[in-house]
Image (cartoon, rainbow over all chains, first blue to last red; front, side):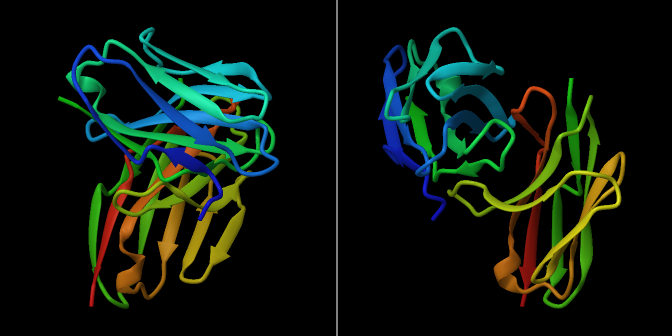
Length: 112
Length: 109
């Protein structure tokens, strides 16, 4: 158990809908990262937050947004969902910005 | 742009048959090279971090090494429970990890 908690584990929704994925980092970790893993693209970095502020952005679509709350948990919001958004979404956390990243078990999103 | 290429994509070994996985990378300013293990349907599990060429780290049957252009994950006398996908990632100035496509390892008893 990495100590990073992601909910829900599975999410099934329809095209055009909006969903929210939640991540609780390891106790004491200030950085949260979001990654998308699909069969054809592998594990891709989406966005990073450090102590409530956005620190880095990767290949994140404009339809996707994230935030980190004062208690350090983070949410990834996906809107206007398309079939191609079906993937595993992972959250990772680290103490600082250059430390080892520990991953949660992921949320499997299926867009039908 | 950072790039990571892992080979082979898949590797089948007999129990006890040692081998190596390769991770080639191109990065501007390497801050760290990471190896993770991922089991089906689970999140990546941290194995090693290497920071400079010549560095080596070991854990049980696994040994990771680093040169200026690539890293190797050596698996000595593997067991069926070592079957998993092994991911290599680099961290540069942007702090995020850039992952390779992974090597899917299958160890048969």
